[in-house]
Amino acid sequence: DSGVTQTPKHLITATGQRVTLRCSPRSGDLSVYWYQQSLDQGLQFLIQYYNGEERAKGNILERFSAQQFPDLHSELNLSSLELGDSALYFCASSGTGGSGKLFFGSGTQLSVL
Amino acid sequence: AQKITQTQPGMFVQEKEAVTLDCTYDTSDPSYGLFWYKQPSSGEMIFLIYQGSYDQQNATEGRYSLNFQKARKSANLVISASQLGDSAMYFCAMRENNNAGNMLTFGGGTRLMVKP
Image (tube, rainbow over all chains, first blue to last red; front, side, top):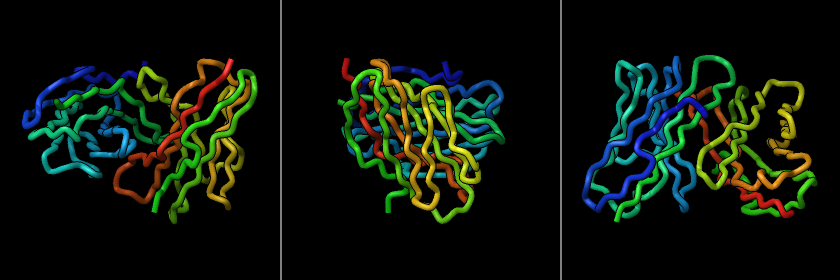
């Protein structure tokens, strides 16, 4: 168990809809990262938050947004969903210092029908 | 250009034998970190091993070792005495210290299949 909690584990929705994925980092970790894993794109970095502030942005679509709350949990909002948004979405957290390794949650499998 | 390249989409290994999974990287940052993660069919990402760019010795963690050749920019994962439970996807990743965040950039992965 990595200590990172993601909900829900599975999500099935229709095109055009909006969903919210939730992540609770490991206790004490200030950084939260979101990744998208799809068959054709592999593991793509979306966005990172550190202690409530956006720290880095990757290949995140404008239809997607995220935030990190004062209790350090994070939410990834996906709107106007398209078939191609179907993927496994990971949240990860890391502490300060050390190797910077990421601890991953078990992921949310999103299916857009 | 790809920052992390894993050239072996799939590999077979006989149980109890050793196997090497290849990873090459590209960075101009003198300070960076290299990681290997395992993703079994259940989907979770499991950290295996880490190598810092300034580490003098190759990293080892149990049956896992990292063959770090800095001049060649390669960071191959060696798994000794393969077990059936080693069948999974394996991802090489890099953290560059010159980026604003600490995100990891992942390679495309290698699917390892262990034969009994």
